[in-house]
Image (cartoon, rainbow over all chains, first blue to last red; front, side, top):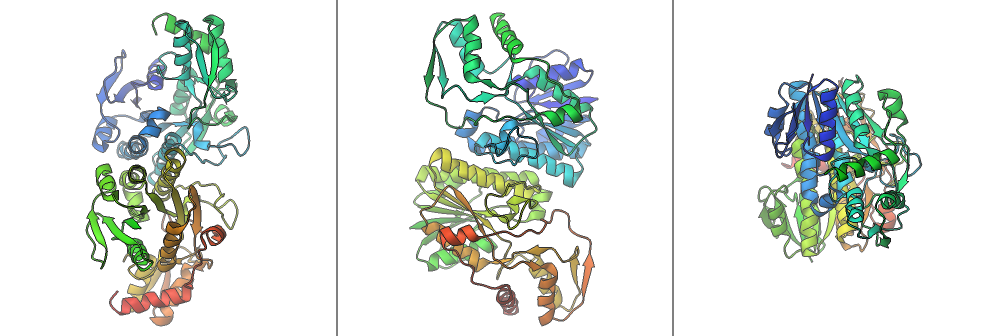
Length: 294
Length: 294
């Protein structure tokens, strides 16, 4: 089975591509620039370009669609770009998948729900995102699921928890805290630090893509989030425990999603997904990795 | 006050532009091609083109944003185009409005709700559209409301009922029924004909735009739908009463939104909106208009 992985040059895309290789799939990466990963062939292209996506999809039975404007601050700054890449891009992927008869596994996000009406939020929870990132990610999910309904393109959408792990972007809160603490600089928590996140390790998220690729299910969305809710303060404390430095508090960042518990019970039951990396192990591994040169 | 009306060359856009003129606004039309309407200046441009929208917005205090892929069948056929025009277009309008300090009144649709969880559906009803038309219209609404939240662009979204009235597109069910019956051909109802719609006259919808332009409210969505639920069968019967012909039944069209009652109580209370045209009057007026040459 050949899988096209869009966004394969990105943080999570690399984890997914490697995991799929390990699990015996042949993998083609699709991204704006060619990445360097052993045993993966590459196609350079832009998700906004229908023809580029359609050409890249030839000969693939599966498309793992992770390519996106994934930086929430960039999406807020450039909402038209976010709409192009995250919504038009999904339509292009849907059409390419239809043309070659491929199934699509989509990297959605737990942030599609917006403010919690009840907790833990399952997949039936209403979706009411209010940020350009989550608005466009949800619209992309819906465009793909509509293609499942109207065009017989099998689609699974994975609503991923906030990802972390080796290779994380330098502007992620993990990297900002670790990098500062390693240099002995104070760490600034934006807001109270009591907002929680079900940080989910990239290797566990990659496992969900592999499970979804092997599954016969389609036309459905699954929460894929680790069970532990970790506050930003706990994250800061875990970092400071290894690299002692001062913790201070600043203004909250606008656009940060409010905390809410999300249930991954359905992914466990129907996809057999099980998160294996605890937060404690995961954050220690990330610090080890950065000490080793990242 | 100068108002830019996007989609001013379209069926509803023309009604809105005329109404705003009557109500004393200065109106500029923005559309792919220049329309011919007295006392309205025109800018030709494409909503997908950020610079075209930004340039057109100069000197306007208000933007009524009706330009869209508004044909649900075209949106289903060309989802990437629908995403470009309906989502990227809204982001471009939001950015243009921010740059010139304009308020935006957006033509959303009652179809954003998807299947009814309760009826009548008010504005707090969850939105779960499953068709490329309503998915992209909702994403556009949310991009605009996010600009109200994050960029201080005042936005009102009007979730419009299914529009009808003089100037209706030839492929609308009204026109198809009337045109066939006038030629003495049988009318075919797709599905049972018992699906209901709160058909809302274009002149009443235009009145809602005028009210929203004058209102100080922003950051909110309002249902704008007539109270009567009319079945397709009732519509066929109203047409056949004037132009006697046979009514037959065919397969339902995929993608047609399921019927559900929508409440416009909030628009009445907060915008002072009141629908004035009954279905009986409206459909008679439409037939009169078509007899007069359309």
